[in-house]
Length: 303
Image (tube, rainbow, N blue to C red; front, side, top):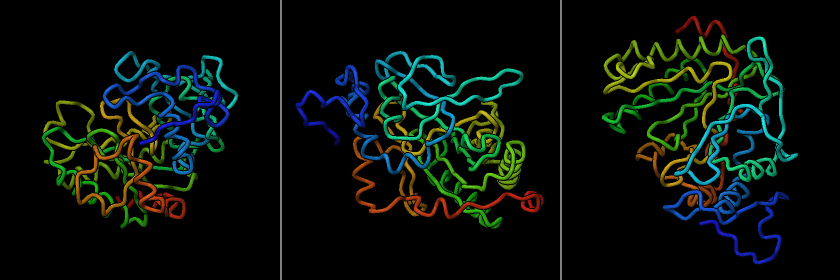
């Protein structure tokens, strides 16, 4: 459990950012406060920053806690801390301003704004039109068992391995799993979306009784929805290590494939994530950067 024991007048200054209302309770069941959330980010900064820095953000803001009014924010519209930056992004014939961060003070400044969830683009500001990851969101119907869900993500891993692509898995902080593929930022959004669509559809074709790539709720009963649309431009997915605005203060946690022997979906929270990482002694996605590969038309043709 993360708690601040300092009684000094600077106790509410974390990474140079002053928190107002630090004792405001954000997760009432656990009594998790704004300052405890900020301390969580201070402890896991080395793990979360490689996944969040320099990416356009979609934020879930819950200034009074997750049980009160929450809202999404994609565009910069308020005056913000200097540690939070903006980037112009073309949207049709207009240009919108998105927020991004590249430091721990930026993370803490977003906590000060009441942000509980970070959702990131699949590209960074340096190469905005060229994604550097491909993501598959496995969203199971409540009737789907953990064993069936695991078989599905393992099948995807095998399918990707045949294409010489390495996959990594994380919990979503909800009932599903994310399979993430680090890629070289060489292809554009259209290509990556087409590629991910072809992968998802090939899996559905092989197991149509268990899987669907159709968003329609009526088509998803008793099945696992493979959401590849998160690979579209301006789409986002919850960031690794981000908390969720949900009961229990769950965290989207990277895991090793062998950890899927047990149902880990609700295991990781703001309160235990730091201890988990200390026990591991290494990043559960240690080889993530080294695994980057270029998606090619030859790979696409194999699908």
